[in-house]
Image (cartoon, rainbow over all chains, first blue to last red; front, side, top):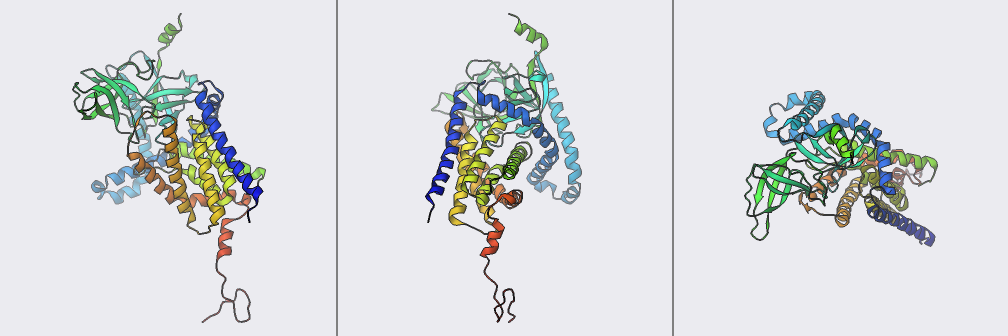
Length: 294
Length: 194
């Protein structure tokens, strides 16, 4: 009835593939950032970045069309009268919105850098998002600027509205940005103007709601207050984000009688799921020279 | 599946095209909070049309390339997609299904299994954040959206891989169709008017 050799071969094939996956996982977690698999990843990202860049540009009108359709569905009640007219103009509008959204986003990024309190000792490098992680568990994007443009690992990244994340790996022409929505992210922040400090962490699956943790429950935090980076990260030791980058606005405060800390919810200023442009904050040239001095 | 250089080339091109399209084109498109995910559909289609071993191999290769392109934990997607490809392939080998709408059910189940298993693996590997219940909504909506696009995606995969498939699924369906009634002299193809 069953050919034993076929069954044996099938099981062996499955065991090989599962074994290879487990070996990959083990080696990946065991090696440093300069290990074989990490280097292979950087090489692959570099190699396919032209493909991703081309696909991203080519499909942008389609994405905007879908985004536009989604917005229209949300606002259905208000748009009933205009629907028939809008239907006929949809294609034109999608094209026009593509250009306008790009302009708005770039204007927002430039405006952010001009705000008072924004770090002045940085040189922003603008990049376009060319690929995004499809899962909610790994929130990262790939951008089309890399070490050739002065981008280095661990540099902060902003987008229109506020903080987006930090650079976690770099190739010659691309960089991977791990967003503040990623489950591994933790950013030291403070509520202004009172200066109450805490750590901003994401809630996986809820990109519009961040948590400001480790706020003593005796400290009063008001709804609507602005949250900015406080100048050092809580994640281990390094200080990655300069002080003064806007993160979001306090949307809800949940005091807990049984906990030491209160849970403060923040709505991020930046729309991290739909951004197309970002800026990497690289140190100014004279700061770099100062850094390299012994 | 007929193993030939052409089959490998076609499958390789399909994997690269789907992963690039997913990461740079379809991934950011959010519809009611969910999104299309072609990756599990590709693996399920190969599993369904070619069997368990090609399904597992495609799952591993697709997952490997996905992890490589994204810079995320190497092996996580490969592990989950290997299981999805093998599972769908075994279903086909044991049940030998031939219904025309089968891709919808297979696509939905494969997508849900992939998303849930990937969530479990991610959770086990490294996790230090709270999880919103909206993750379940995301999984549900993505599964539904994938079920909607499953038929054209499976058809496209069958078209691309057609020359390399040992058994054409559409041929299998034709074979299963009940025979037409023959005329009184027993000539096949002559229907009886009543």
